[in-house]
Length: 152
Image (cartoon, rainbow, N blue to C red; front, side):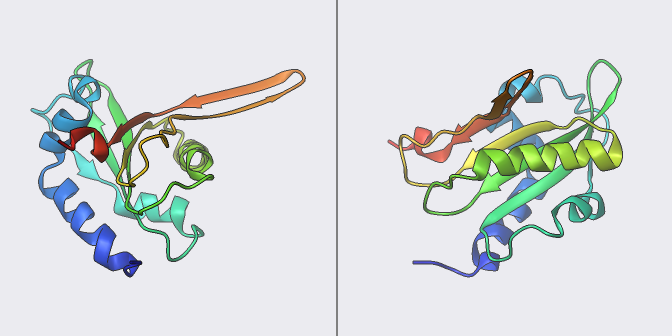
């Protein structure tokens, strides 16, 4: 059953906002360990809208761009992407790369890019985007967890 976008992504956005530290510690403990949780974090809604305004309408994902402080004392941006659809998507890794490069292009920030996948496929586990042409090579990797991994 295909539900309207707002039926699926809004609860995820609400949960990520309300429980951001806990979600990070549960899904991405290695990244969470780098964050100074004693300092405030900030959701960058307006900034994210500028990079995603031409994204395809009707897709089911909840994205959060969050400014955090790392324990080393530096501010850093974190792109947390929740894919809330029931099937795999061939362009997913490319979209993660596109968001990352748009953030860098507009704000000169290289975000920590993370994805939570909610689909039903055991085998679909994108974690990077690569391109290789003659003298040019690109290898973009992002953190990924799959909700199916917590299924009994």
